[in-house]
Image 1 (cartoon, rainbow, N blue to C red):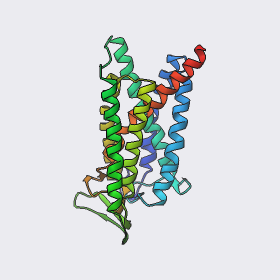
Image 2: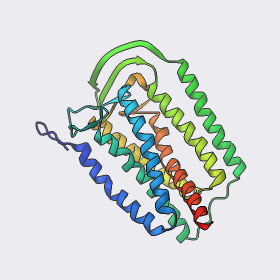
Image 3: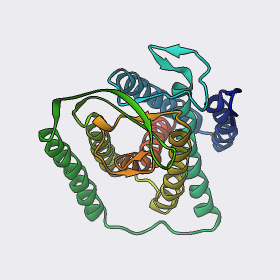
Length: 273
């Protein structure tokens, strides 16, 4: 990391450490053959088309800012967003799909049967959880106080963690997380009906991805690579990480697996025809 007087682009260096598993994912998918490479291409396109607009919107609305007191950025921006941010999500979500496929492979080689869960029970659970997320988002919307303005203020707490607040208290990031989780659960319900995934692979891969996502968030938040705006968060914090981010980590594996499995089956059916 950087030392006093000699800041380094640590965020960019960290991203270089994430590239090996993206290479691993590409090699694994190529070895699967069939419609898998095309499914990976579609999955990557979906990730880019979803994350890039969200990144630009979030940064321009001030959901988080970038503090360069400890580590510096490369200085390259797209639409006002540092290029490091654009690279992070594709690299990070490639880990989600890699974990899912590795656990699928382990299930196959160990001759483990998939978890037998009632499709009806699973469907109602997913729909209920999705509806709950949207209901919570509607309730949080009523708590907004956009007129409660505060000037830009960056401070450091007693644990040497960066804290930032600016603008009205409108829970923008909280609403984004709740709605994103609701949409992911609804998409998982639809995908599970038409292209069932391996729950035995989904569950452990989500657990591993959740822990790694939390680790990365704690690292980036502590170093100031991204500092969340308290005016857009719920007020429940895990160190430098808003509590609502926990919902986002739970989405990574299901949302990538949904697109991959659905596309692979769709392309596979066309090739068979």
